Amino acid sequence: MAYVIKRYSNRKLYDTQESRYVTLEEIEEMIRGGREISVVDAASGEDLTSVTLTQIILENERTRRANLPSAFLHQLIKHGESWQDFVQKSMRSSFEGIVSSQRDMERIFRDWSARAGWGAMLGTAPAASEPRRDGAGEDSDKLREEVAALRDRLRSLEERLQKRKAE
Image (cartoon, rainbow, N blue to C red; front, side, top):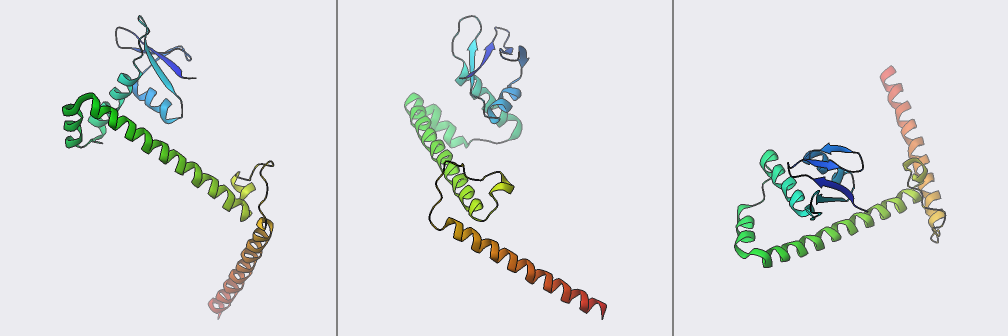
């Protein structure tokens, strides 16, 4: 469910859940924190979410110099709604691909870290409902043995270095 922000005629934004006025920067932080935001006109109930989010982007452009290319903006204005629809669909598709790739990478990292025996340490151990793959236990045991052997080797090298320093 979306987090509702009411916009009043004086352009003030009111957070209905927290019962307080908020700034565009605070709304930006809410969104970065994972909240779904819905902005509505307090009097008419009109959805102002797109307008408000665009305003946040424009404020970022002005203050942080994270400029969108001028050529892109010219094309957006020149071709109107058809171009805007195309851009929206393209951006949505790209964003969905990025989110999907991120989820895949997180899953792969959890699987890899669990096999390496780091699952409990990282808080990424596979859920009990996940079936173990054949050989996963053997791979984990091999990795633990390799790590132990490397630790022994490192200890040995450190001892040799200490002996040379003492000479």
